[in-house]
Image 1 (cartoon, rainbow, N blue to C red):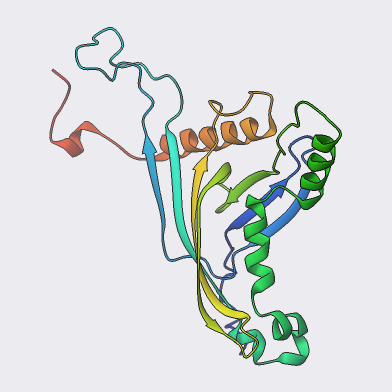
Image 2: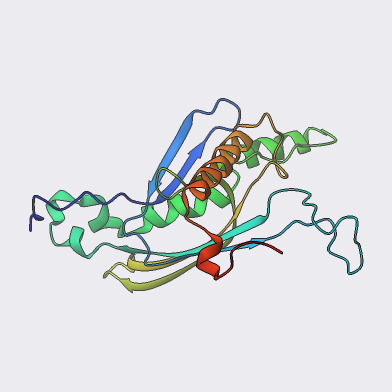
Length: 218
């Protein structure tokens, strides 16, 4: 079924993985369906949090810790209606789509094998694997570096080969700020752009004392 020609194109949210050293893009993961809701919590990073600390009551030691939660749906029903056009889906269901999300959490098998080889050779210290820089993209005004903190999958339907064909994926993300990354890091520059965008948007919001029913501050 074709959509109405005047219907605006809806952008998709998703995740982008980039190389932390070269900033080259490694992978783009677009959500099949945009979730109905995205919840965010911001935990203030104040200095004077203890009661009675009068000298520090208004000071901030850094950006707030922002956490994002969303639930994405993946469904192969439409693709299975046209098996000739979607052989991978017919053979594997949505396993590839789930795997591309899951492997964000894994060091590569090549790194694990290399680390094992170094350990067997007597290397005293094997550096932990550095994951790609993960970006959460939700419109042009929200491109933020994040770390996955929660990840759960509920597989809801299967084909005759027990491949999942419908699932819900719950993601918990923690925004990485300049408190988490070196200021020269690509992720830190992306966070600064994100904060500056917030400041720009805030400058556009209306506000007046008359709306509060007062003419001035005593």
